[in-house]
Length: 30
Image 1 (cartoon, rainbow, N blue to C red):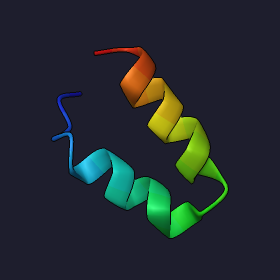
Image 2: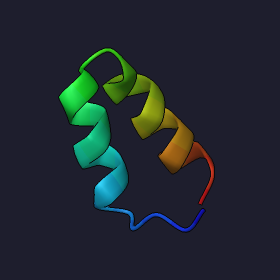
Image 3: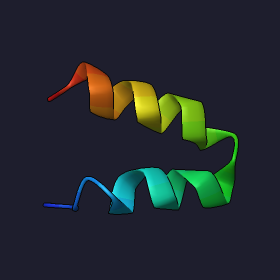
Image 4: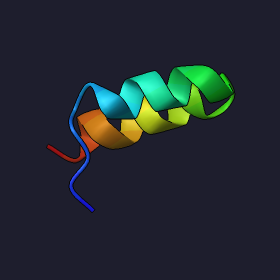
């Protein structure tokens, strides 16, 4: 699944709990 970089944090923001997790995962895996 190729999700745009912007789409990931936006989707995570909707969850709130997954936001920090998703952000770390995206930043940790360039």
